[in-house]
Length: 472
Image 1 (cartoon, rainbow, N blue to C red):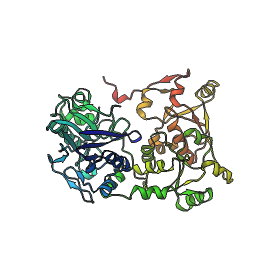
Image 2: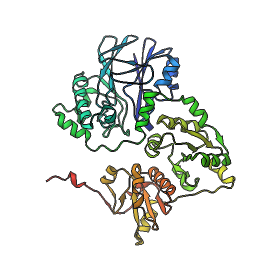
Image 3: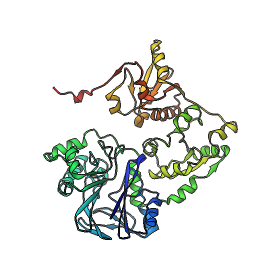
Image 4: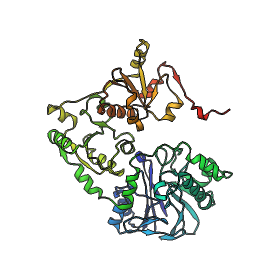
């Protein structure tokens, strides 16, 4: 028996390859399926099953394409209702894979079709669970995403999740390995550990949601407390996962059209395409196409695209480092953005050589920022980190305008005075600056190195405790 976790860091997503006696199963595959096909070929195995733990919201799964290429059936748990052919398994139904068995445990709560797959070894001993978004390491799946489809409140879904965990997962032996669908950084939970594999016994000790003495009321309160609004692209990804989608090969072929600066500009004007610059933030700061948006490939690219671009049908033109065109288009398609029309051939250098204008963002070091503060200049700082990061510690008198809700804060930015932006390390502040500039706010200065660099200065810091958390 072989179990391999195939982890994609930028999505904090785990897919799984299970193999026994020349037969393989894939659980929660990503949209580009070549890695799974290559593993099966290399191991002289045949992909027999494709298991989906639920209809994913944060990425488009590769189940449809993988089934088309292998003939393997797609398997969901009870109550799933895809529009394509699939096996809708019963609770407790078992599937043989070589000498091992995969058993379906229906574990609703995150979504109503959510299921955990229990792997039994050739002796029938429980070996591992593939828990999808039902159980994470350090957390459980958020119960607010399926409210509309299930016609239930988040509290009712949380109560259902409580029963699933207590009745289906917690009774399993402590030595059972837990393989979740996501790790730290995913928007599908709020308190995940950085590790991606653990034992169930350890999770019973450290996971707040698995406390043995926890009441359902306590569980519901703790699981629903502090949930941030889900990214706007989630419902559309669910739809694609339920209804199917265009092959990634066609999307990549269409998106890798090399466009001259003239053709690129014409395409942008005629289609209303968003110009998305995916280079490093330092390159974007120096020069970029006016009104383009920066979201760099070397950060949490796909999740930020999904959070900040409202419509997955939005036409997109990309400015991309040479040789990374296919990577950019593939990563866009992972979160359902399939309408990439092409990329700028020759990049920003070709754009400049054609005589077209560029824009830039003023960027200063933390030391230079400190000097400006000490001159007595009235400076307003905008911290675009998450509220939790800001609350922990921030520059004195800074305003918190989190990147994921930056459009809700436009009125807070001054018309004439300079706004100084920073995040933790410099990635998110440049994204924010690009969005603000596209909205007509140009009096911006980015603080390079972000809060990490500011911490090395002598500037005063403060923390903030929300009044609602103060007892007594």
